[in-house]
Length: 170
Ligand SMILES: [Ca+2]
Ligand SMILES: [Ca+2]
Image (tube, rainbow, N blue to C red; front, side):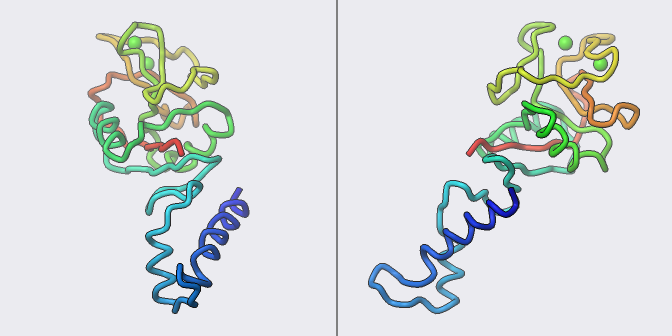
């Protein structure tokens, strides 16, 4: 995947690097400037990490699920959805140093019916043992659980503060 991304970047660079619209060779400063402005569909915005056609950005500042979702919305994305074991491993790689972090899964609209905030079908789940349990006054937002269940999920009150990963569908 990394190699594919590099080839994509290389193609984008080459498409603008050698000649401008008048057919003149561009000096390196202009190449760099135009590269920063170029829009290639497989490239992610600055500070966003590409993976399997999507872009991801981890935010280490803890906030409520709704605040996190609103921040992701500002960038045109959502709290990361996870649709496969492979994607779960990828996202957890960024999150694991923080131990617990929000995911986009929630059942705030209908108790027990979990949906992803970005509309992804719930085809993959990775709940920790005995979760989701909707404990106490109710838990409606999903998170990566603690290190007792690495990479597995728990439902939690949405007003708790957690770091999170945003995801852009490209
Ligand atoms: Ca619930
Ligand atoms: Ca729970």
